[in-house]
Image 1: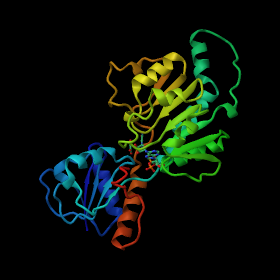
Image 2: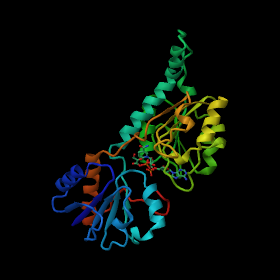
Image 3: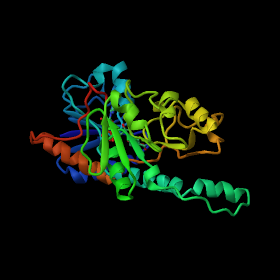
Image 4: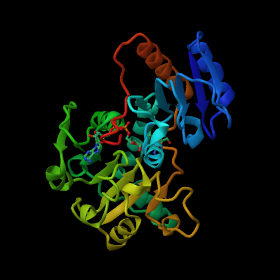
Length: 313
Ligand SMILES: NC(=O)C1=CN([C@@H]2O[C@H](COP(=O)(O)OP(=O)(O)OC[C@H]3O[C@@H](n4cnc5c(N)ncnc54)[C@H](O)[C@@H]3O)[C@@H](O)[C@H]2O)C=CC1
Ligand SMILES: O=C(O)C(=O)CO
């Protein structure tokens, strides 16, 4: 079995060695320009078109991340990168769930304990205890209740917050109120104090966090965007912060990355940000999942992690 690998930034040597250890019978190689030799599986992130285009004999393609929006948009322009019937897989959790939990819990607690207010007071030399926030006024709403949204919901339930989620179909997560579909979105938003976005980037979700949505949140709400920059209309977020409808935002992803120097998000006092690091691919966990899945596919067993090309995630 032949496996080709391409990632623009990962330590390729490390990945090739670890993949080889996990699948000792396979021949694993880095794909290089001009390589048209056969391959059974391709492991990719931002693959060059010529790596996959017209390739015969491929049994599966693995995206080396959770979101497949970049590869799907490339496939739209170059459909022969994924011949009919060849499955596309993505990473399900593989260590990203815990990272998303760390990010969401630490930020929610930061706001809940009013560290943002105390930081402002400190800058003004003010010593002034403030009223505590109450958990019952701090409902967390998670847009996207999939692998990562589900994990984040669990961790916030454990901290005693009221948690609700919104997805395409209803979920049965312990302690989490589930809302499904467009009709249920207003009810989900009403009373939500902290909105956490973990939706995939699809034509249905682009621009979903806009003026209309933000206006339906609880007063002095907060937004955490952990999914993709295109979900959020940045100008609407800034307007909602300036009008007082929103109290703060924590953003990991942006419509353009790296965020251009001129973008007003950089200087807004109530916007905090990280450079798309909320959850990164952990090589060892990802390699275990890929090796297990390839072995299952080779044995004709059912597998998990296949992307629905119809739904776009
Ligand atoms: N910032 C970062 O470092 C990272 C960001 N991500 C982003 O997180 C996203 C979510 O990842 P997973 O949880 O693994 O995805 P998933 O596919 O397991 O979950 C997606 C959820 O969104 C819901 N959904 C999809 N379309 C919908 C619609 N139109 N209306 C309502 N609900 C809808 C689904 O029902 C599902 O609950 C990824 O697509 C990726 O963009 C993932 C990893 C790291
Ligand atoms: O895996 C993903 O989709 C990511 O965004 C990683 O940063």
